[in-house]
Amino acid sequence: MSRRARLWVLAVGGLGLAVLLFAASLELPGFGGDWHPYGVRAVEAALARHTSNVVAAVNFDQRAFDTLGEESILFCAALGTVVLLRQTSDEHRVRPEPARVAPPVRRYALVALPVTLLIGLYIVAHGQLSPGGGFQGGVVVATALHLLYIAVDYRALERIRPIGLYAMADAAGEAAYLLLGAAGLIAGTAYLANVLPYGTFNTLASGGTVPLLNAAVGVEVASGVVVLLASFLDQAVEIVDADDPDSSGRNSDQDNSGRPRAPDNSDQPPAPDTSGRTPTPHNPPEEKPT
Amino acid sequence: MRPVADVLIVLALALVAASSTAAVLARDPVRQSTVLALLGLSLALLFAVLQAPDVALSQLAVGSALTPLMLLLSVRKVRRKGKEGGSHRNAGNRTGSTDQEGRR
Image 1: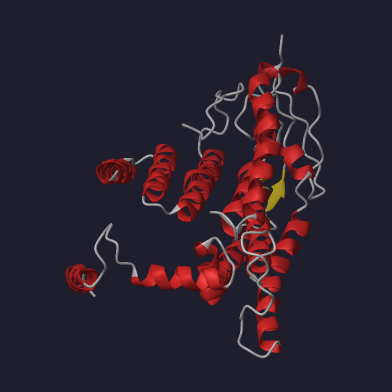
Image 2 (image 1 turned 180 degrees about the horizontal axis):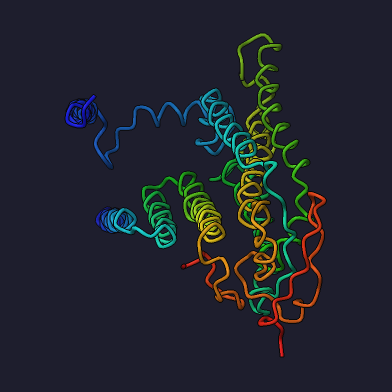
């Protein structure tokens, strides 16, 4: 197809979409009006099942199957990233050097880390009661862990981040959601049916299966995001081409996080890399601190 | 009460329009990721004034932290690869240069 024909196809498609969207918007309730046909029904159904956060009731009860799809999207994205960004045979790892962090940055990040972690866990746990839930809280938990990279360095982050464990938790979260859905089938109603007792309104255990599905999503998202970021960080910080003779030396110039390297570390021999290759010690004379 | 809410919504919408235009116009990926974080922030603000705190929270966590970070990491990797394979692999810019995302 020529460029001209393709542009025509694009124009026709775009125009059709615009017309359909406009026609659909004519039937919508007015913006900011007081007629909410869908909202009223959703709130009613949520209250009937003792779930005070109506959005959570929609996500994990009325439309729980949609959430299964969304959760699987993230799962597949993390899986695909791990496969695509794996260390290939023509690459090797360079262990990052310890980095020096400016004391105020370190203090701030070390204070912010536990607070952020707590907020993330709170958002996951209270998903069925207040705004938030497994997805939002999971992302906050995952980003909280990465504050350690800002506070200390990449080695410290790696110590608290065994990838295998997080990958397993990722799969476990996804599996838990599927199995909780199957529990609805076994109880004799339908897949992902809310079969547990609804509990007391506005308490942590209210909403039947909502808090459980919410927690499963929380585990899946938190570990999925950690695995996702780990693949990106490994590529950006540790993994270099093996056929580049200068790469290992070049890498020890910086601490691989972009921070200037501490001058007292420049005499330290590079740590052995994981591929078993011993990198040549690298001490460029122009770099020696005087 | 209503006019105040309307003003807030219009302001947030204008902010979103401005920052998304800026994100499109920024050609340098590093600068673009910063603008993208701003766009995420203004979108979160818009969702908050539209009384959708759940969506605002996800937008805040993903749009203003996660996406720019992944973009920056990708840019860093790509640029470093270009630098290693490039002609100036022995260039003298190695003394603890602090330019994170490799302004080359």
